[in-house]
Length: 385
Image 1 (cartoon, one colour):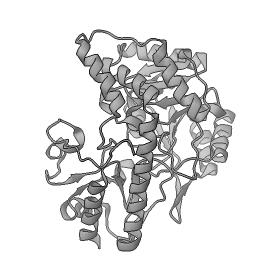
Image 2 (spheres, rainbow, N blue to C red):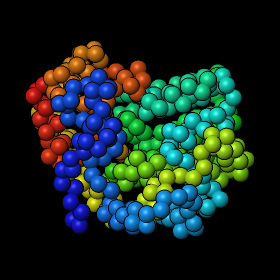
Image 3 (spheres, rainbow, N blue to C red):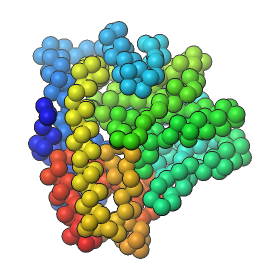
């Protein structure tokens, strides 16, 4: 392989949330952090070189991207997912969560209902509740180690609550589902029937494992709003660059107006440079990264099966986030969390931060050198083995 993902990079002392804020978040400093969804790998060297070139220029004034930027973004999604967009369809934002907040404000009024599917990435709850909208949940069905959609409940919740907006997580965080074409078509059919606007958060779309295929919702419905970013794919979250893809002119106008009301205009200069570089030059790096992550997943799966069979790994179809079912231990969530932190000395994401449906689960980020993953699994074995 051209790129070496085994190198351990010391992230302590860089003010990163993952490593440097344990005490501020009520944790012990000696925990191995495998919680927040960023990677322990440097960004692609080609991207780092282009950022360095921007640094060497030495002037960091207001920046707007040219056609090359929009072409890079459009070509990435057109080539990989068959979703054809143009510069006109792309709205830049400093982050997906920020973008979702603006979308909730743009497309709904106070007290109107927004549907999400739980357990789910916890900011989904916040962008609805914090903006005075009514939160409606369509819990995913967990059966024999797999999550599916209760379509009867999905449509009933929409009809009963006059839902105006549906926020889909695709691929799904934290349960790792890659929704099938049939599942996406059924959700689309129901939303169109009830005039529900669809936002599809597809920030994890570049991490899909063998045997599964990600379908961009925009391919099914050109009125859908697609949220993406290079942040997960290339480990660029701190550079604050994300996008909405909106082909529908009316919806695009509403969201653009809401973005204007926020007072945010030009994005981070380095973020723009990094995004264009990543989508232009990062494909080979990503291909090797995905091979490495797939091997990490295989190793974790074999370790758990052989040595910790009571911890059930929900089969990951996508993302570098493992969703671990500890329910066979019969622990309360409080006791489980305590044994993870106090016993195993690990910092994972407690399942209930993703909603009550996450009880008995932990989320583990395996986007790290294999030596780090081996250490983490050994700690789990020491406490639960």
